[in-house]
Image (tube, rainbow, N blue to C red; front, side):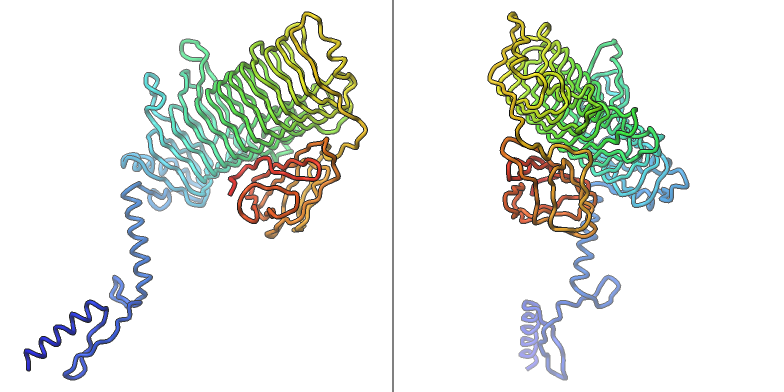
Length: 575
């Protein structure tokens, strides 16, 4: 009997083990009962939720794996940095960098707070992150590698999420002897030079720099290259391969001369891609110059940007090669929208250049100026130029180009739409352009050409003056702030959303335009509360979702032609 009971009990325990039951003894009998798999004992011996225990174990494992894979330190908890901004935290920062560098790289986190002091990074594979605000300078200063490849030395550095407070005194980030640097999702406020490349007398001491999705507020310069000739006195590119994409630059300061001399000031750069950015200027002070100034450059693409209210030029490029400027919206510059000097190999295409309707301040108001470029070798094609008041296009001392299919509408000009210096310019083909409202017709431009000139002018026309021009004058932007689902974008170039609650736009009204007029409108949101339905009749917005949300500080450029509205570009990803 005992042997039989032993065998029976053994089978019972085996069954319980396999099928998840527990064994309970009542008197001489053993009974099976189903286990409560939702309750287990935690590490302190207390009964608790199995899900909770597994979650904690998973989190602990993930944290351990992250630390094993890449060191993560907190400057406050691990090194005693002061988040109130009272004490200088430079020593704590240096200790954090030294510790992480000694582990072969890792992430240094600045949690929310204000920190006073400088951070210096001279080793590779380091990330500086957080939502803290730094009253100091982040110095990305690699080791001198003047005799080595530009891809040797200090690289793999990421800066993300930080706020830099310049207080009109400091540069935010300075760079030298580094490559492979990402600067993303940061905010720079009141900085002298937000991102500054140091004056190192060697070609490409910094290269492969990605600057994306940042916000620059009231900075004299968003990006600045401190140019210097090489040790041998040679002219060289100091910085190579920079992307500046989807950033937002604005000037709010109207009380002092500080803020926005140039958004980008780059002299000595080999390789620049500048796409999807928005540049707002505050034109109240004469110290402010151009949105973008680039000199001594090679391989540069400026595409899909919005430029507003430069005191001088929207884009000014000098002494460079292989330049593309296309699909940009340049509004309300006080001088030329695009000015090029000493350029070799260039395309300027499909830009929208708009000036304010102003009969008084008309000096130097030309859409596109190309000068001193005998080897231009390129094209000025498909641009729309509204109210330049002087010339739509002006060519001085430049050759080897095609000027075709551009459209311009003027009002106060007393001169010709396309001005060409026939004496010092040649090998130019001018064809298919429509120029309306200029005092001198295209036919008279042809008559001005000397017989010996190699400039060909044919098949251009002067447009018509018998239609009402609407939607191209924009002395100010319109503000949408009443949380309405309907907006009217008639006769504006810029609409700014400041809705206080989440709002979906399901109706867009425009003025009655005929098919001879194309105009552009930029829609920008301050707080991210605005979305646009993709089901609005005759409105064509890119993407696959039913609505498109415009994130905080981002914009969409729309083209209005006849009765339809089409998206041209946006400063944030298409989903």
